[in-house]
Length: 75
Image (cartoon, rainbow, N blue to C red):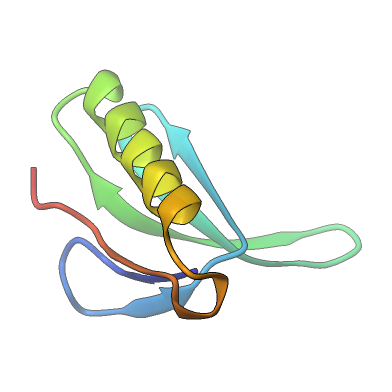
């Protein structure tokens, strides 16, 4: 899935999306002993970060697999 970061400075092709507290992170790649990730957005609460991930999942469930995009909300 292609995601535009919250600050609109990056468009990233992510393999996995996760929350870490108030942060939403996207995993870009994995190696034998490491993982490359990038912060996609930061929100006021952990709950809001989890809501954003749920919204991304809803988009994944409803989109054509070849054209998956998402823009991170500001708040």
